[in-house]
Image (cartoon, rainbow over the protein chains, first blue to last red):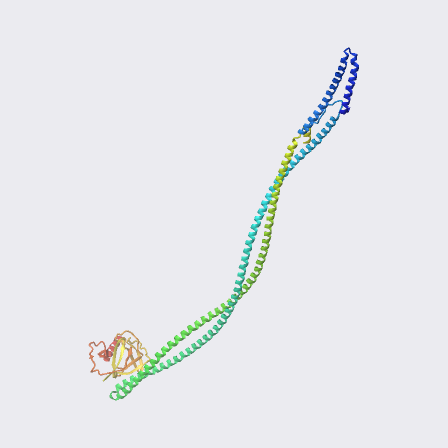
Length: 427
Length: 143
């Protein structure tokens, strides 16, 4: 039964008044002096008033003490127990206050429980976040390392491409040199061909001249042979003359012998015979002289003939040599023309090679550009990953801070004692 | 004055006086004489007569050299006979009485005298001794 405090006071007043009235009625009936009646009544009324007042005040004070204790527990954060008033017969405003306080308790406990759960969740999440961030940081470090490797690789690639470009440029230069050399070779082969043709012409001319010389020498040989024959005829005639001289000599000798046999008569004849003999002797001498000359001439003409034969041999050898030289020139012309054709082919090939090398150079330059772009991109990517890494670290830091905050929050909230069943049910 | 016809036998020079010579013939055809001694080289036809040819170097003991193509036909006083010699020299005219003429000591040499003519030793052939030697030889051969 709900009775407000003011009504309770009113009821108490009424009870006091009633006890005064009642005492006024009862006291006279007692055998006591009359003058004490008033005092007894007053004292009785006072006593009733005091007792009632003590009872009421005690009940209210107790309730307020409980409320105060509840409020203090609330302030201390003990939310484990609700405020429970002693169940009186008559409830009053303190019970409303208790109910309100208990509602505060409940809502606060819910709040704290939620906060604790949330902070635990936040803590766990932030820890997981921190772990994830660390993993991501590690991953981004790895990515950064990989990108750095890629960057180094790109730099190496760029260097290699530069080297290849240099080498290919050198090759192109070499090919240009080869091309110029092939040009020179072609020119030289052309000149060689011309020279060899001139040489061939000269060889033909020399061969003709040699043939003329050979013909002249053969004519000279014929002349020499006929000359020898003439000389031979002269020798024959000289032999005849010599023979005649010898015969004349013999005749003169026999005439001398005959004259000697004739004695004095043959003296003049002997002189004639002697003269004849002398003539025959001189004839014989002259004939001998002629014979010697003829011998000499014959030897000379023989030598001339021999040397002519040797000349013919030499001329033949020269003709053969010139023939060989002419053939060699022909072969040389063939070879030189072949060389010229080959040189022209080499020139064309080197032109093609030059074009190919320039294409290679262009392709390599394009590759170099791509490699440079790659390097730049990898650097950007590296920078991005570094930024990402930094962000990750910041994020780790932030999540750690968040965790710390959650911890702190949890600590702050742990001040509140939610009671055993609440905690277990919440966790 | 005497006229001599010198000729060579090997290296030695012999000579005959012109009156001892009939004629000098050249390149006669020498016919063989079968059964004759070696010193008789053969025989030639001379002016319708057959004249034996004496190989004089062989007879006088000179080595067989180059025989000359001329024969000396001796005069009838010593003939008929032809001498085959090695080489003939030109006729010399000299006074035999004024020349140093040394008489030969040996008769086997067929030399009747040696004369020194301008530093050259010339032996005069003794035809009589030669004839005697030939006869002796023919006799030995026939015997």
